[in-house]
Length: 444
Figure 1 (tube, rainbow, N blue to C red):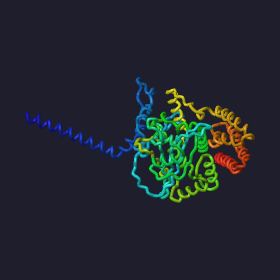
Figure 2 (figure 1 turned 180 degrees about the horizontal axis):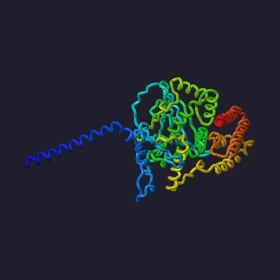
Figure 3 (figure 1 turned 90 degrees about the vertical axis):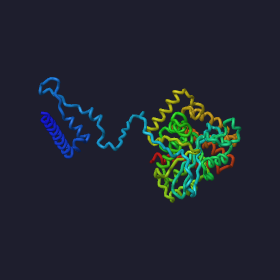
Figure 4 (figure 1 turned 90 degrees about the horizontal axis):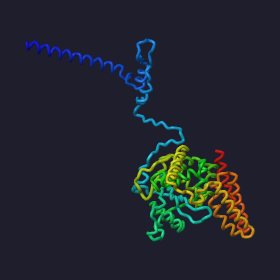
């Protein structure tokens, strides 16, 4: 009896094993034959969308189609190896941000070829005042033997011995400019790890607005606000100086191909007329020729950014050619200022354009009234407004043209009265170069 029970038990076990093996083999064959079709997300979604479920009552005609929206929302895209980012066209969208983790790192120098170092300095000086702080400090270093460009950027508060007692807190690169250009450029070269600065380009707030406007920014004041922001975008002065360098990098890449032929000549002359520089058109074209002959073609990989002194953090990379990104950053800065109730109207350059127009008109007409009586005094008082290109802070084209004409015409008259026809011709040529530059922009 006992043996019979044991045999029955083994028979049951063998039958179960046979059922499992047979069923598993059948499922494997079905999977190998049709598995790819049934496991594709789009086919699964299609399959379920065609299913019909009976309603709570038993009437044959009262059926509901299964809603596949939920399945589509949870099923992955057909190729899950590809990351898809869907951007909104909402002006308030938050742009995708890349990060640069190389700009702030110290890398031992390996390039020993010839360099052409051009210091680019943005000075923080108020309208009509000659005292200058170096607010933005950059070097465009052209690697003449490799066809590459390094933009070396230095935060304004970097330590520099400006001759003050250390307890004053004035020993910074920004105050070195007040000691003279040569002392400042030598300090820039030292901090950047370069032997010397060969050329310089210097401009103030108004000139920067004109340059940004030529680059195609409809609201140059807003763009400049972004580039000058220290706290609102994070990273304090390091992120700010990186933003400025990235802006220059993107503008070079976007406009390098335009520096050819007659149009290139107009751009070079116009750009040099808007800033103070020891470069002339011939020198600029010579440097450009060296850069092109060494293989520079305007590819993104041809321009790198270095922050000095080294500060190994990840820098946010913004696309300053994207209007929506600019709108987002401007809103972020305005919100930060509003939250902190920070007063940003500490200087004339932060006033609205109408205020600037009224102030300039009042000041300038007071000066030019003495042209006939004292031309040398007129030159002394009026020249600073011409050098600063103060009219670029005025948005209205008619008002801007009026102020520029009053300044330039009276300067020319005063120089002629002083028998300085060469200076009078310089004023005339600078105005012409500026007009040609913006005519070219409008025709493009």
